[in-house]
Amino acid sequence: MRSYQIPYGKKLLTFQVPEAAETREIRARAGRPVENAVAAIRRAVENPIGTPPLSTLVHAGEKVVIVVSDITRLWVRSDILVPVLVAMLNEAGIPDDDISIVFA
Image (tube, rainbow, N blue to C red; front, top):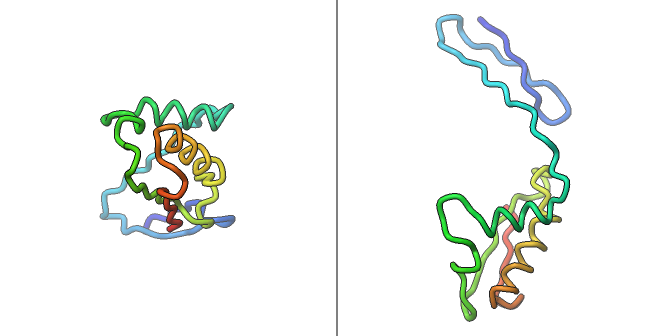
């Protein structure tokens, strides 16, 4: 058996894989920290990959639901993401009363 360890919360999770199993280890490259999260979110929403910008997808009178991670995924930073998305929806003509937020 081959042993592996991966970070899991504040601990390391150890698991074993049979020698006969084909395995590959993928390591992420360190990225640069985002200096201005609000600006980065706005840029991403205004220039998405493979879809038109949010401002062209929503229209006044429509209802919008935002689904974000719950507190168990703190790295998602819903505390920054949600206010930016709500502000952008407001700018696109969607009032707060037509926006629902689901934490999942």
